[in-house]
Image 1 (cartoon, one colour):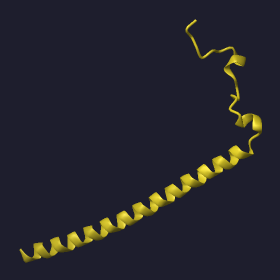
Image 2 (cartoon, rainbow, N blue to C red):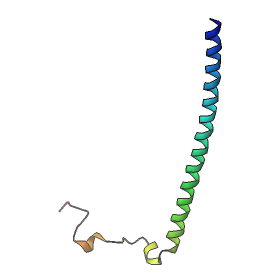
Image 3 (cartoon, one colour):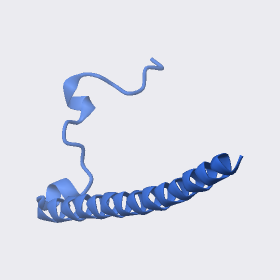
Length: 75
Protein backbone atom coordinates (compact mmCIF):
# COMPACT_ATOMS: atom_id res chain seq x y z
CA UNK A 1 0.00 0.00 0.00
CA UNK A 2 2.84 2.37 0.87
CA UNK A 3 4.44 1.57 -2.48
CA UNK A 4 1.28 2.61 -4.35
CA UNK A 5 1.10 5.89 -2.43
CA UNK A 6 4.73 6.66 -3.25
CA UNK A 7 4.17 5.90 -6.94
CA UNK A 8 1.01 8.02 -6.98
CA UNK A 9 2.81 10.98 -5.41
CA UNK A 10 5.63 10.73 -7.97
CA UNK A 11 3.17 10.46 -10.88
CA UNK A 12 1.20 13.48 -9.67
CA UNK A 13 4.42 15.49 -9.34
CA UNK A 14 5.44 14.56 -12.87
CA UNK A 15 1.99 15.50 -14.17
CA UNK A 16 2.21 18.90 -12.47
CA UNK A 17 5.61 19.57 -14.04
CA UNK A 18 4.36 18.46 -17.44
CA UNK A 19 1.31 20.73 -17.21
CA UNK A 20 3.48 23.70 -16.24
CA UNK A 21 5.87 23.03 -19.13
CA UNK A 22 3.06 22.59 -21.65
CA UNK A 23 1.45 25.85 -20.51
CA UNK A 24 4.77 27.66 -20.93
CA UNK A 25 5.28 26.22 -24.41
CA UNK A 26 1.72 27.08 -25.41
CA UNK A 27 2.13 30.66 -24.25
CA UNK A 28 5.39 31.09 -26.16
CA UNK A 29 3.93 29.58 -29.33
CA UNK A 30 0.91 31.86 -29.01
CA UNK A 31 3.18 34.88 -28.62
CA UNK A 32 5.14 33.85 -31.71
CA UNK A 33 1.97 33.42 -33.75
CA UNK A 34 0.77 36.84 -32.64
CA UNK A 35 4.05 38.42 -33.68
CA UNK A 36 3.86 36.75 -37.09
CA UNK A 37 0.32 38.02 -37.61
CA UNK A 38 1.40 41.52 -36.67
CA UNK A 39 4.33 41.38 -39.10
CA UNK A 40 2.11 40.16 -41.93
CA UNK A 41 -0.37 42.94 -41.20
CA UNK A 42 2.43 45.51 -41.25
CA UNK A 43 3.65 44.14 -44.58
CA UNK A 44 0.13 44.37 -45.97
CA UNK A 45 -0.10 48.00 -44.92
CA UNK A 46 3.32 48.77 -46.40
CA UNK A 47 2.39 47.15 -49.72
CA UNK A 48 -0.96 48.96 -49.76
CA UNK A 49 0.82 52.28 -49.26
CA UNK A 50 3.09 51.59 -52.21
CA UNK A 51 0.21 50.88 -54.62
CA UNK A 52 -0.67 53.56 -57.16
CA UNK A 53 -3.33 56.11 -56.24
CA UNK A 54 -5.84 54.66 -58.73
CA UNK A 55 -5.76 51.28 -56.99
CA UNK A 56 -6.24 52.90 -53.58
CA UNK A 57 -9.42 54.69 -54.67
CA UNK A 58 -11.30 51.42 -54.57
CA UNK A 59 -11.89 50.78 -58.26
CA UNK A 60 -12.15 47.09 -59.09
CA UNK A 61 -9.11 45.54 -60.72
CA UNK A 62 -11.22 43.59 -63.23
CA UNK A 63 -14.64 45.21 -63.50
CA UNK A 64 -17.32 42.64 -64.27
CA UNK A 65 -19.07 45.03 -66.65
CA UNK A 66 -16.09 44.76 -68.99
CA UNK A 67 -16.23 40.97 -68.99
CA UNK A 68 -19.89 40.65 -69.99
CA UNK A 69 -20.98 39.02 -66.70
CA UNK A 70 -23.37 40.83 -64.42
CA UNK A 71 -23.73 40.29 -60.70
CA UNK A 72 -27.47 40.82 -60.88
CA UNK A 73 -29.28 37.94 -62.59
CA UNK A 74 -32.82 39.19 -61.99
CA UNK A 75 -33.24 39.87 -65.73
